Length: 247
Image 1 (cartoon, rainbow, N blue to C red):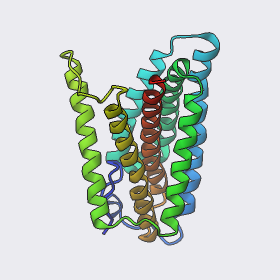
Image 2 (image 1 turned 90 degrees about the vertical axis):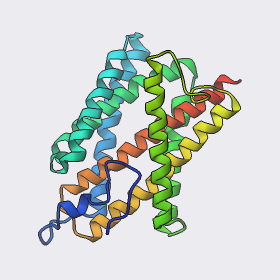
Image 3 (image 1 turned 135 degrees about the vertical axis):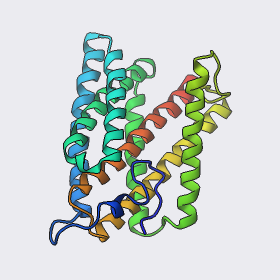
Image 4 (image 1 turned 120 degrees about the vertical axis):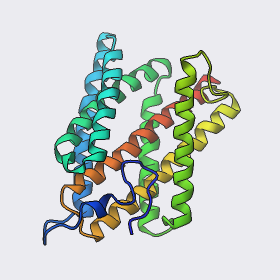
């Protein structure tokens, strides 16, 4: 049985629902990795567009940030519920996320010089370190590990939802957006949970390939992995900005 992933786009029964591929046409790890590189290239292209407009022309890219976020969320929901659309919608999702991240990163960069490069490097280093640890079986997605990460991820999602709702009433979740030591500690915990989701994503994709999932699930697996990477990068930005604001 497919193990539980903390990533909501990679659920327990996703591969089981879509059966097995025909001989020679199944999902592979290499194929998923290739799709991931394509998505990253598209995402970076979108990020360059919104980043460049903000940095070179000092343009208002709030529309790119909000529009990219909303469009990305809608596409993510469609892809999650209808994985067969992944080969067609995932590239569009990557472009929308690129526009969103480029605008968001530019605004952080304007306040904290060099923060986006630091966040990007840290995200990639964490990704590679966990991938190596997973491949060497230094860390494994056991049942208790999955349940722990899933529970922590759900808790963080509920906390962000509460913060969003309370914002309409002029209230905030204590320490969540503060640069105090407690606020930094909260961000650090969230970064760790986001990073551990990568281990579950690696395991989920590996099991999908072993069970012979359909070829289009390579796009779906790469999509789920990108969702985690985007989350991890944003949390890195938040953590670094809190630390920088204390200097």
